[in-house]
Length: 303
Ligand SMILES: NC(=O)CC[C@H](N)C(=O)O
Image 1: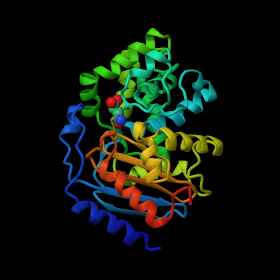
Image 2: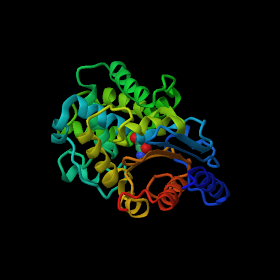
Image 3: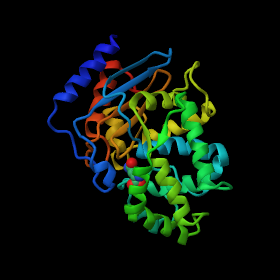
């Protein structure tokens, strides 16, 4: 299999496509990003790294950060996290408040916004926001083996100023006793976590710990890696998770910045980025690109 040719072929194909989806507009800083960009990077189990397109351009990882915060929170409180957050797909948009009322302030899973806010509230416990974010950045930098990864303050500020729906979710959960800190404190931390900037090379490297391959960084136990991947497969693309599993057949986590981290267990960590989004709020071309990649490589976990 000539992976370089596959990667370059996909990148050329994506560059030529007129339908690129729509960039997220509800976060002002993201509305300015050029939708013509596309990048894909792959880290293989033997340590080889390949990339194509705009693989050196940093983008806002947004909800892809929820994978790292989940790993961190599980490391801190273990299975106690599940007393406050569920493990089922929600079938609703990432920022929906609908089920929270029916389910008494306990979010369906750690990848929708409400669940990620509780996850952040968990790793914030016993720390200041700066210390908590320091812990998260240490985790991400160690996973990627890159100390230059940083938080884009302009993006964080942009979201603090406009994140009314996330404030609504946080206050609603607090009314049910499912937030241990003031909403401003937890959300300030959550918005900074979402504002981590990475390029696809860095993100593919940061995802290597989820591959469960012998020579890859071991940030969490094998069992936990399996479970995080299971949640990525069932909940990682919100109400588009079933469609993504059907088309790609790999666990993935998307963000409204247009990035997706996709894991081929035992084989590869893949990062794709294209800023235009589909109706679910996941990268339109990014999803198509990993669909083609999975088909051409035979990497689907379903054979
Ligand atoms: N889907 C996403 O990437 C959403 C993350 C974004 N920071 C928000 O909370 O709305």
